[in-house]
Length: 110
Length: 115
Image (cartoon, rainbow over all chains, first blue to last red; front, side):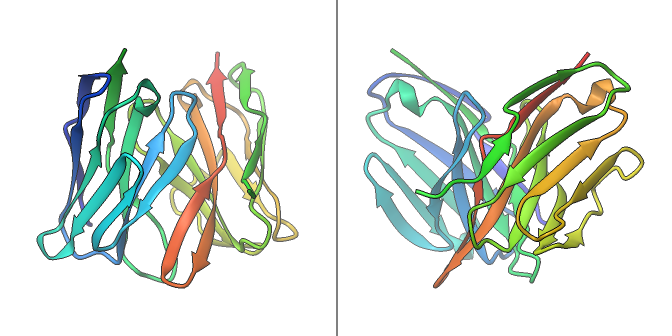
């Protein structure tokens, strides 16, 4: 089956720093999504991005489907950005099930 | 803004006891998912419903887990008897489709601790 790999597994930064999180996938996908799981466990949708680039405030994401990777950029990090960032892909079948990476744990220090 | 509701938020139980979790998806969302998430890992799909029908329960440990969505709206996930290894976050999600967007929205989860 398809493999979804995220890197780095852990990242510790000072407030105000920028960061880049990467998601590689082993086969063609229908779409890719980025989620943020806050310290209380809530999963929040960040981007639905099968290809191209999207921006939302300090966050932006780029997916290069032909090269099977996606990047999530966080600029001017804030402590509220802490948590785990997951990418998930779906293969476009009728069931619409997501295949998840293991996540990148981000800690922003004040 | 509409949200997926889950209850309880936290549950502590002793092994061999029965537990039940409830989920109410966003109104109009026909597809509902139950996931289990162990600390440090991504969510693992347990069961998927389309309206009141089970679409996929291949990863559901059916000897102790059951799930239902009788009227195709809210859903209940039950564990009986609970085991120590069932300690995890249980997440419910519903599917949203609009135009070319096809995504899942998650509830706040139920954190289960089995003692």
